[in-house]
Image 1 (cartoon, rainbow, N blue to C red):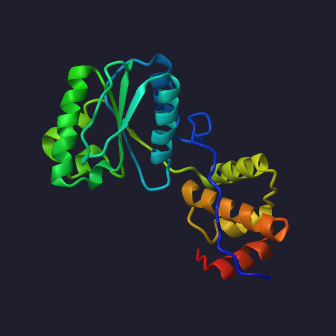
Image 2: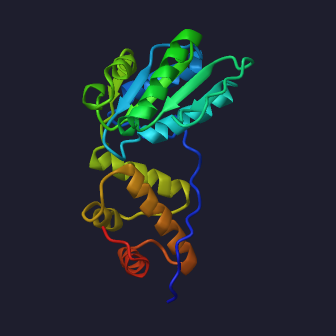
Image 3: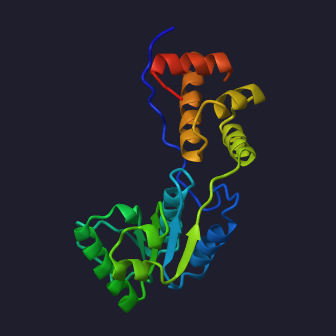
Length: 227
């Protein structure tokens, strides 16, 4: 057996259709409608714990919006936002809002003012609801002025179904024994579980072995992976 460093391949680009909806049907439908109608509406604010899919949805929305020939700006409080007048509609994506410094909040508030004046769509995400975000009052009020959705984690059976479907798409088989081992030892959020599947996919390919609990244990030892 040889030591390897996992060189994980990139997964497919996130998509709205590929999102595992679970208890988050309302926000999924709202974002789908936004892309289908391509009309500016009120700000949309997503909040929830790490791993529930907020960043996945923002990236998926970015791709879907550009596919409709809209302009997308990933908000960076340190950069000047340049808007093309030829773009039919502009989408401003703001992730990790609750981590902004006072200077970043100032820039974000100015961007929100511009968004209202020019009819840009804003979709934001954070780990907490607006009221608990610690943001300055005027910015928090604007972000909370539209639709606010709490994103909930998937139940264990939904997570297992998602892993099975992704494994099947890759031509892999995840047995009940492997799934039980994973779900009793690893963090139950889809982001980490998909990373683990990436690692197993690569590892099983390197060693030309099916995915089993012994293979998973071997990978954990050789790569220093701790549950």
